[in-house]
Image (cartoon, rainbow, N blue to C red; front, side, top):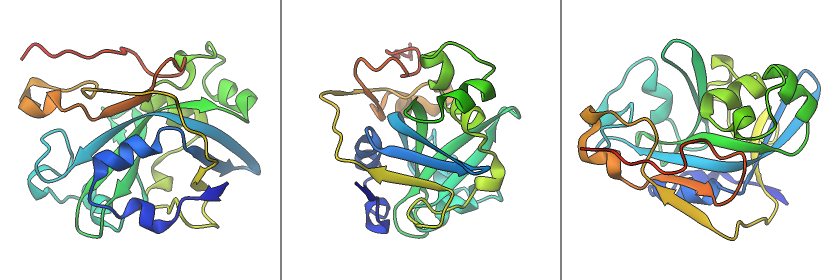
Length: 207
């Protein structure tokens, strides 16, 4: 078992990284407790040609500037003014690619996770969705920019050698008609049969 090194994150192929992250371990330490979860669902976002990406067409703002940092750091933002979402920045510096962590399976710290999530059901309702993950793990914008590969970081990603028998690929969730053809790119990856994967399992857009 080892912490993923910097080189894992700095490839230009964000789609490959998104798929490779399914099955890896997310370690979060807060208030003296270490919580370990397995990543079971991800989505890839690639600037500048991906209309679903915050950095589409080289968009550079106070929010997106961390996406232009060297791969391996956290990109945490607030969606619709309510939910924090956790992303893994990838690629070399100045290439704004990122992977959204969409679902995790709790391995340790379940009592804390359920308390943070108001004791909802222990399945996809608990941590099957990016906003649910951040609520479960108490991740907010203070975590923005933290390094996943830093041995001293409170948020890390590890590889324990576990591999899922099947990883399914579908279009990403929640795409708008304004995203156009990029809505149909099969850049969502999840562990087939895992009960923590977010819903819907299949996504079809009418346009």
